[in-house]
Length: 480
Image 1 (cartoon, rainbow, N blue to C red):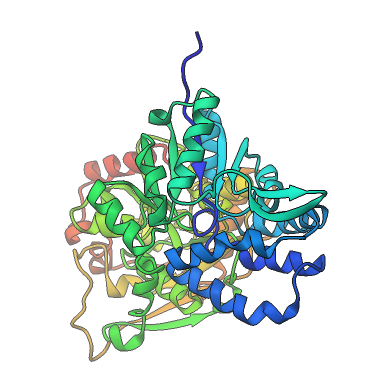
Image 2 (cartoon, rainbow, N blue to C red; image 1 turned 180 degrees about the vertical axis):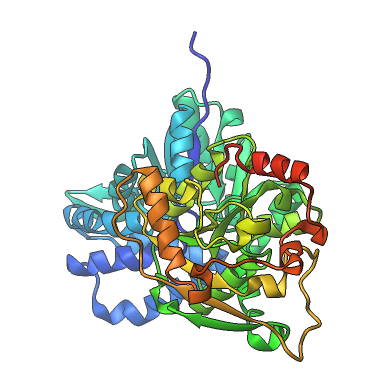
């Protein structure tokens, strides 16, 4: 006897999409002649209110009257409009939703689109996304035209939960093993009857309910685990603090900011001189207004308080001693979602004489990401961060406001000539970073004892035995 299986039920508007499907569908209906331009103004106001606040009881009562408004429409023309809208809607599906689709498919769960939007209008989208079933409002038809009635349930609120339960019962689906995703408080009946409810981009009442019931809260436009408040993630809030007046103990000199893409995936790579380097790149990205997902050492993520902050910012922890590919897989997922991923190919801040070596040596992580994702690799040359926060100190010198050091951050053109050969590509990447550094960085330098000390934790130059042990540790396999 076959074992019962679960399914994955997805709402559409403000769940799989950032807003509503109405603008795209409305435009398609105009193109086939079923809507006039005169209604555009009122519709745009209604759509904007929906995007901001989600479903309301009055708005859904009006939506229910949509069947009467469509009375007399040709079913064939509506199907043509739905076909036109399918691809724009598919492109509008939030990036991290696709990862959920893949996870459920791999687990053998059918994907079900459960939405109030009429089935005729969303069936082509469901097909384009590879969904197995659509549970949606069905308008009555007669002689090839809609007749102004609703055939069966109005698939909203309790009606949606009832329709899903009936479909599950008819298809041997175990709701206790099922997942449901929605933004709307009115989908609480649906989420309450499955074993794995998920509140996605929740409206205020859904957020309150999810908090009380301890339902996971997701935002499918950012990686799992990143919170958002009124649609804004923590990193975007911190961008407002990345201004000279808030950082009087350091000066920044930037160049090539316009070479950072305004949208789309890219791998950002920089040299590593200080604990301040990620903050310097964060300052650079703030000028562009784009969040970045940073690969960093596991130790940072495990630290009290700081670790929670880094996780909330979307950082990706790297266990250097394990050689695990999991960090790169998460980075690939972010790139696939069109995000920026940043890393320091050197993996760690060089110590001792290696810190002054003009030849930068990198690990394969950036080259692997480029080969796997096809995303461009953009080099960033960083200089002077060691004067702000040397490795010998536990904290940056935030008191130096009278003569603050200057940090130079230069963005270069995407690295050309990558072939997939990890050794050769890594050499190209490191060469591109070196070319962005000042001339003194490319000259051999004999450090003074004081300069050497500043490259070691605590300012203590280790013995030869300690140095050999540390060198061996740095040679262990790792992502970066």
